[in-house]
Length: 250
Ligand SMILES: NC(=O)c1ccc[n+]([C@@H]2O[C@H](COP(=O)([O-])OP(=O)(O)OC[C@H]3O[C@@H](n4cnc5c(N)ncnc54)[C@H](OP(=O)(O)O)[C@@H]3O)[C@@H](O)[C@H]2O)c1
Image 1 (spheres, rainbow, N blue to C red):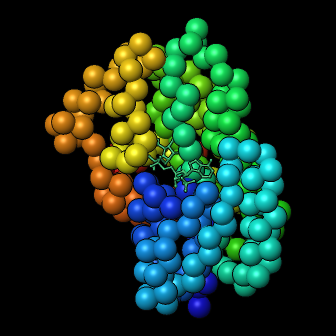
Image 2 (image 1 turned 180 degrees about the vertical axis):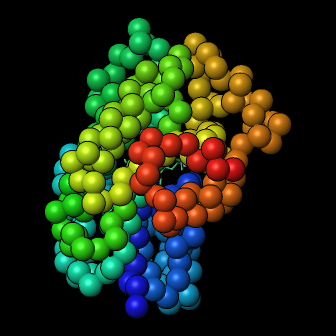
Image 3 (image 1 turned 90 degrees about the vertical axis):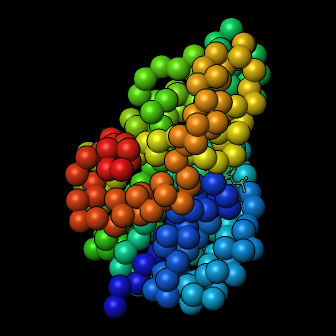
């Protein structure tokens, strides 16, 4: 019988939480990696007979990524009989939102790079080192359209997502037996969008566009997006296109 392990960074809320909900079943062990657990999700898993683990770590710091990798390695050893192993690198931040001349806080820049790129690389490396080569191994890196075309105010965010795309392309050539994709999820109604709408126009000149998308109910719900992403991830074709956008499949 297939035993599935699904590891999701940032499953405590937003898109990651909706993704976790897609994988709850009695054959699945779910692992959240974020600063916070989600007790409701843990209870849902228990009710459905799924196993739930939460690794609480601040991935914006190298020490947090190190701690998370150590705990993940221990869990992977515990579930060495899993035949399907999915790593969804989803945790991320859009901060700091500012144009180049306003990016005066090196700490905020470093934390964004560490969370969006550094921790993703660490968790991926841990996953590759501690999972068996014969298993069905899939890595889904949640990227963004922001890494593929320039948006004023998203210099840091876009740079991190372009790096995610590049790293994923490298993974695909280095480890062709592991299926890897960098996927843009579209514009999703989460806390991240609320942050975008709250940022002032001098830092983010495109703010109005996102306010309009929200007012006109043109943001995709996290649940709908997660449904599409879960179907995409479990499809036999997964990994054929390394850089992709889920909106192509809506
Ligand atoms: N929403 C969109 O429109 C959109 C568009 C394109 C791409 N994306 C991408 O989709 C992914 C999910 O975004 P979202 O919209 O769901 O964002 P969100 O609602 O802000 O959720 C972010 C998730 O990341 C975790 N996280 C944040 N900072 C962390 C830290 N320092 N250490 C560990 N975990 C941390 C959060 O958990 P804790 O707070 O518990 O730590 C939370 O679970 C991100 O990679 C984002 O770039 C989103």
